[in-house]
Length: 275
Image (cartoon, rainbow, N blue to C red; front, side):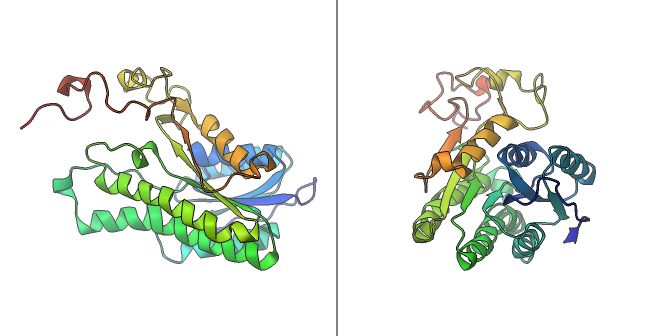
């Protein structure tokens, strides 16, 4: 894991947060949302160095301290290293948001041990290891902090080709509950956010390519990364001080129908005709 140079905030130290996968998309939006709440922020990125530089510059322009680290979160040592480095740089850790992950959808017949291991390491093991390291830091220092995990509506509703991805996202939802119970005596809250169809690159992301999917969302559009970030910021904030162990769905109503009205193969859902 490589580290950037230090920047001292003219505003002085405040609360501190670590976001994994914070250079762009939901992670970047979450970092900026927490900065607006007065947090200094550290974040990890895997390969998008230019985006990381831009995110750091935007945070510093808002007068808060920012550090970033290049890290491949599926490496077994990366999660605890990121938490340790962020705590050292920021001086404390009040919040952890685990965004880093990969989306891989493929038919069951194409599922291999290598594919399962990759998804498990990045989407589930890294989340748990980050939470464990953050919990050690918070409990050791007597910090009544907050942990927020990012799942997906794939954790709540089954889709074809997502047996691995959706299964691991479901595991995040379930693990959140156990973490919340275990850490509640320490005043540490653990919650989860399950985004649906989110435009992570900007308002025009997928606008033409997947417009027909957006129209299937009850609210009639894709969500924005900032809308997920506001849910994260709420769960971290004192406004959610009596909320722990929940999964907040941010999907425009996507997961509400038990079954789509049009389940024909032409609708694009992937089922409807027995082969």
